[in-house]
Image 1 (cartoon, one colour):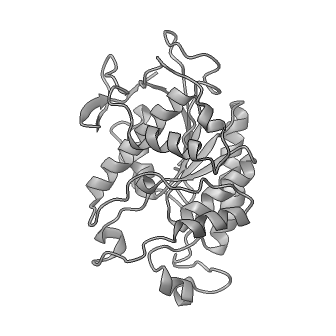
Image 2 (tube, one colour; image 1 turned 180 degrees about the horizontal axis):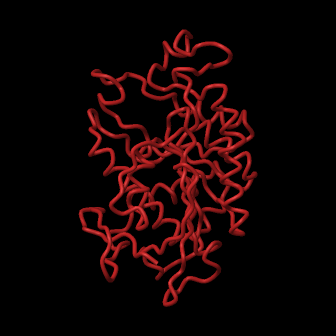
Length: 299
């Protein structure tokens, strides 16, 4: 989850109350990080992600973020810590619940800053952001149940993409998305996540099955590190198929390359219909692309 937002009760933004600024008047449902939140994102949050990657002798290739400024700022700080080889990608499908529960009774005219402002902000922080966003914007008025289905679908899609392209992703998003993702993990089955603190995250690595065709170590080429709750870490066995696992040359392209954006958009927005198969044994299931999928097998 993003770090502390500027409209929190005790938060300050540039030494003042954000709700009394012109920025609030222009973007009332898109608060930036507070002063304390920005500092925490650049130190505690980013360091936890770096420590996890280093401990597993792997790299985070792409940091994917919700289009809301507080998430983009948090993601940019993580990218700065991970180094110049990490790209930042904005995904509309990871955005906040787009309904009255969060936004008020009326659909906001300007829910987020325009894309060019977000790219410019990232550049000011020394981070290269892919210049086009991916993902569909949710329809108004989205309720909590619909949002959690959206979050679960997106989480699974990134796991599948990480497996087939052999790349690691960090997802920077909102509290309800973290909750939806955590509750799908085998070790958390049957539990209810009541609250996710600012900067909360969980970090996991995939174990390659013995009968898989994946080459390389579990934490490196065959793994997918997904960052999005209070610092918990775990290992899980994913049921996403290993057949066809390949390197994706597009992911080596420059951040502004149309080939890179096209590859990511096509694979993440339109995942293959046969990308999922039912796993053996019992386990939690989820609907993905109209199919009932048993998404994880406990190790």
